[in-house]
Length: 153
Image 1 (cartoon, helix red, strand yellow):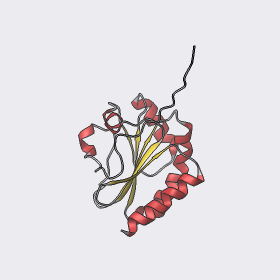
Image 2 (cartoon, one colour):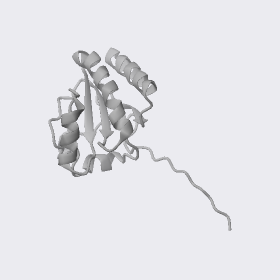
Image 3 (cartoon, rainbow, N blue to C red):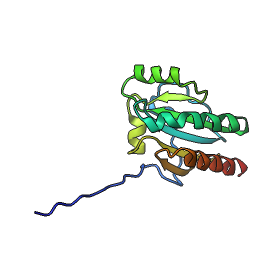
Image 4 (cartoon, rainbow, N blue to C red):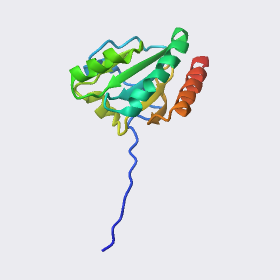
């Protein structure tokens, strides 16, 4: 008998050059900031995800460095319960917006397959890059470079 191992990498349904959909149609819990005309990092995370938690201090630093120039981070929790999301949100200490996708409609439409997954969106609302996972300083440097380049456009 021959055994085969198959490895499949799933990409998010939303991909580069797609327009970010209207997030107000997804029944998300939390305040969605005005994203129009801003560079936006949409980050899908969960409180049980160690790389997600590790990414928050770096994202907070990037957010603080560029928020006055038109940069926003919108962190979308896919936690199972509102209580779990709220508990983590309260402890996180971040100042960028956190929202909860309690009905899992947003994460389902985006077909997110890995935690964390983030998407960098330009000022016109177009997804310019998709990132799966968090690789510490390498990811932080990539985010910084992308934010700077998109803000300069």
